[in-house]
Length: 239
Image (cartoon, rainbow, N blue to C red; front, side, top):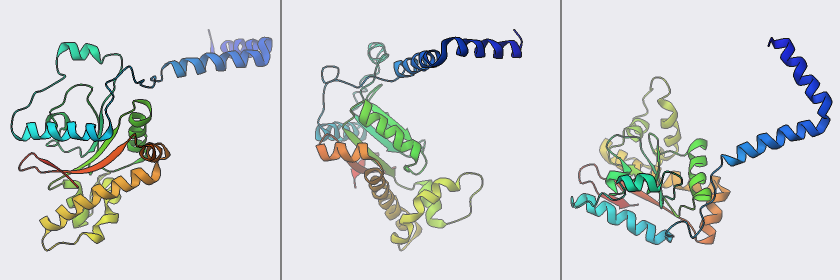
């Protein structure tokens, strides 16, 4: 079939079917789109966790990691099969892309337990916010942790204020608003203060920029906390 013949066929189809043909196409397209969307998690599908219980599970897992007594849960073939059709993570982790900060290892969790969003500087962009809303609204995840870490390279770059190549400066720009409030006696001191201030700043952005998140918080169905990962000890402390 040549291109002109195809165009004529489409026109003939629309002329014959009129608006009903357009409606049919829209209905088919629409049903195909919505069939790809995840179904909301229901109470009988998951072991429901309250936000405080989800936080306790997260911290308990980190303590096992620190003591080197990990249980390494949910990593079996049975678990892979169990979550192959749906996911119901109990916590969202917005953390840095740093290779030394892998959430499932730090919190001794497994497949399907954590909804990880990793970006340098653990910053909130539109894409990050949409991903978090997906977990909160469609997966009913009851906990969000924004996790910064000691000696974060992105935060260090923001503190130093040096010109950076390529697109590296994009995440530094997102951290800049907190830098003026975090001056320290030394670079290490300034960076550590900025790491914590950045976590708090990103949490405020989540609360202010998402009606989905703010409504869940108001209903008591969601908790947002900040954390700081210590590279030297492996421990996560709340901030």
